[in-house]
Image (tube, rainbow, N blue to C red; front, side, top):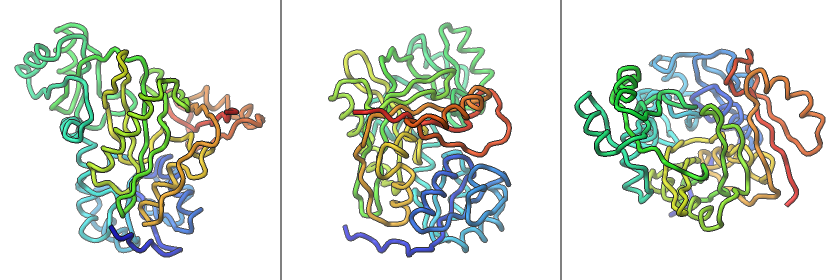
Length: 360
């Protein structure tokens, strides 16, 4: 495949979403000589604070989207809960990377499960649940314990419930919305693993090293690289995320979250077609971070190196405890800390992260 011409220096990269992932993507774009135009509903979101150009509007504002499309050279997004209709409205006017297909698959858990299976990525037993009758059938097929999840708009543990009895399942079905839901088998995993792949416009794929993740209260607390797993498992994780990138025909970066089973098998859990929290370690332990890789791919540039320069532990700075940890971290020579520019330090809110750089 012939490599397309990259965007010229000074071109405008549109970013849908003004959160911290948009912020770090905009900063990477500036480093590469591009101007980030951030579109989102929050006037003082983390991404808006560093954007060269800002469009503060609702994702359904047709006139604002038209002006945005006409003002940028390419569009990407920082999170997969951007309405599909928003990207559909833009695709007719400007190149979108990733495109509507990747977004649509990854924001619907039923479509996501079916895609993973079609791409050759094993998944946990699952069933779609549309009503009380299908809930009973799914419980019979999947068994208990299990996890009942919304198909859309779930993140950081939101929109899901662990169920151990039929009564809990019925209660969760009535509580969780919107329907349909997905019932997944409860996996007795030994490790949570993720891997991030970048895919360029000419089809080149580059995969970062697999990451071991630790969650607290359903929120990522710590990522450890290299992952403390067998080399075969780490390599399998890299191969699986590469399958995802190619299967989505994606231009940009994509993360695949996985469960490592006691027998060494990996099961795919969720896909994120954008930079991912578990890839923040790349900002200081790699020559080219996940954010720079994403911008490189979106802009049509060659992908950068993915080799890790040192061992690293990334920790999220969350809520009041994260705020209190900030000043001491700045005095440590082995730490590179990143603040997102959010206002209130609410419990459970990601305010920043710190990369602890270790010797190999």
